[in-house]
Length: 119
Image 1 (tube, rainbow, N blue to C red):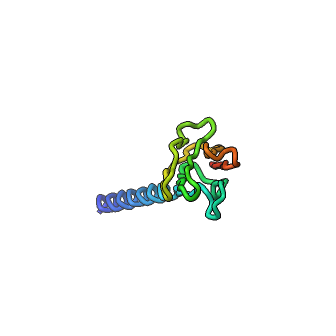
Image 2: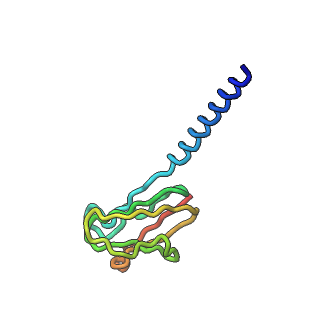
Image 3: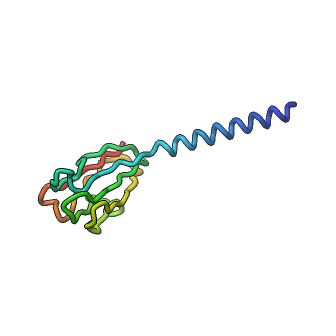
């Protein structure tokens, strides 16, 4: 009887651990940033995103190509290749808290800049 209780207790603890790990990994989210606004402006939409460490930003080419996203001082986050096709996308996951400024190389002079704030 004691052996059965230990087995059931172990099984319950293993199940709870499984649920806890599943919930923590499921809390990471993906936020979309459009390259070029729906109205056809040379801007990121939204221009500032607030996320948590472990979240991902998906950059999606929208209008008035070509676009890219270059992060000042963070080459590992930058995507310097130009996106030409509508819907072309890439994702970056942010693991460390901080503020990350980025811009579109071809349109930086037009004010196409953005910011990712990671809490």
